[in-house]
Length: 409
Image 1 (cartoon, rainbow, N blue to C red):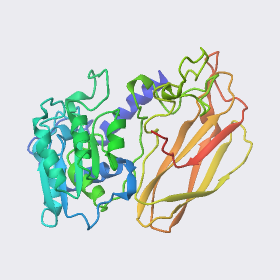
Image 2: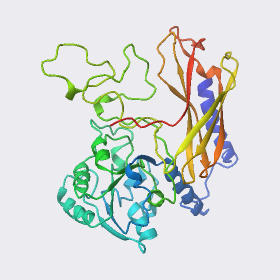
Image 3: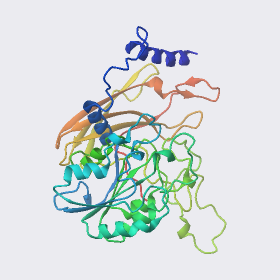
Image 4: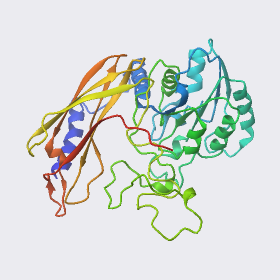
């Protein structure tokens, strides 16, 4: 009841701040603040900060002055409604700035921008337009492939049996890659998709989820280096749906992954009936995800050092202070999301391999160092034991502050 009371209290607090207890009615004649310039700028910045750079081979991004012609292809390049995402009952697509529109507005007088969608929409099975997309890709210095899923495909009661790109989108990316031109794949989707094949075919992958009204200008800023990617994945990306459930905070197992397990292609003929792996290892997909929780690249590099704990041993009533220094060792001013993880090494019941406890976003100029401080009450290390009592057990704990490394495909 206390939890419910607190939830209701939060709602009533907002209503009180809005003045709804004094005047519960809306003045329909009042000027609308929908799509106000200040709000659009906030939406643009939110789209920038939530985008996640998953791959950037040969540092192809950000695009530089050597790029003279770009090919814009894919069903999500100019999809104003679907870019908004699910549950947008009051969304007006007439205000949406798509990537195609933003690129033309910002760079139309500087670059030769070629456009062919290839597919009319994300589920489209008609591949007749792919040839035109391939044609313009062959004439371009770089190909921007905008793929993903329509707004209606994600959200409540929209489950899918597979998480591949729908329709002929995978075939489109394959055909673009066969031109030999560098492909930058930009994904707009409401969920993690199994894009291992497309990631391997692409020089870079930028995941934007559904970026909203100002997604186009935000993506343009990221592609050309006016903004630097800083988003981190809030969810684990599987290689195959058969790996699901797959999440970073899974429980420890009695037979954990060792890194020496045998993959399907390496099993010798007429092998003896022995155990080749463990319960969390798949012979065809391995143990690791495609992209792990907390992962995200930048155009610059960060160095973590001088990790200091307030104490090595603490009581249940204490508060742990964690301090570290983060330095921007690259050439771009950028934001970094600093993450703090904790592992309970031995519990009376099985505990997760790690848990995210804190994170913060900091901005660093090239060469700048900032000190980051986290405070963690030891009571937050509590869990429900076998008797369903919330307890903090005296244990050894591991702690990490730093970057989440990309695992192998």
